[in-house]
Length: 436
Image 1 (spheres, rainbow, N blue to C red):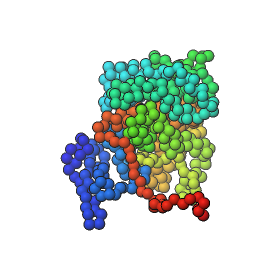
Image 2: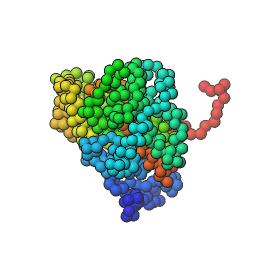
Image 3: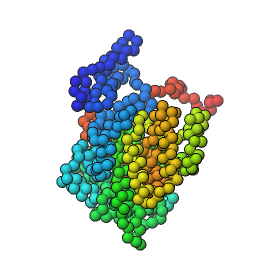
Image 4: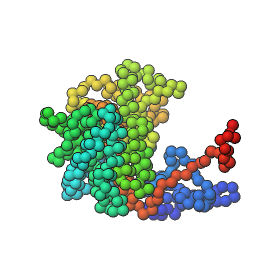
């Protein structure tokens, strides 16, 4: 048995009627084994049916591992807690792209290359002025990232490793600039150019919150907080937006178009908008003394109300990112002098009650990262319309790493899910005059 390349000597037997077929069982380095059904249709004439692909591995990957039952998240084998507490975002970017933590020389070179690509083509500013002033920042980000292929068509040849590398660096570098431009445009302030003497997170905060009429000094605690948020959101295995990027990339589409597709998918409220929904829910609760009322509603199966920010599609235990996000939230509020934020008071008490209440404990409805990130981002000064933009900024490196891995996989094929057809069988066309 060889676990290193996904092969196994074990097999599963599928029996349909009087016929049986042997299906290989593949095993990874950690995690559950998988049954290889790649030749199922050719051998049996039948497909599998798996809405949402919750029981289907669509690819082989070495980037991110999640154990939802144990509350484990690993980037290239490194626990998310260690990376978020001791590293920085660009170090995590390097790790996700290249598979190893960088040496000091590699880190300096990578930081230099990213920093020197943060500016966008000057004509992009005119592109922004084509949007209505009240356009949602996510709609602007989707369009502007897709438009990068028109401005940087010298790095769209996916068969060229050098162009793939340049495109990867460009996107990691330029997404913060585009995100800041989307924010500035939405509030009617002038665009702020990046500065090469600032780190990645500090540069982003300055582009968002500085104005030409006064000096802006980056607060290192706030900068570290946003950097940590970026690390926590950098990748999350084969989620909806990452699968979208891989599916788009499987057709040979250029990397900028693939990332734009991922951003569009992330915009969905069931995916990237959860922290905004959690913040809205805390505002709806309004005060700590109303929490029991909402807990009761959450337990009532006939009440449509749901506690946002609790539970996770993958994590059946405590979301490991939530603990880091909780500490980060307190650091930010403490630094800004926000000692009595009513939403934080509600969040802390809601968490305490939910973790002790038998209803939530039995169902393992633990707080997830979205529960605290919305409060933190609001305290940093971002409106709710920017929350998903920041998510997209952080997740870009994960999308690029997944896209790069897929392109470099010699066994990759264009994605082509099948279907269970339940429509009409073949029927004859009826001229319109004879239709009833």
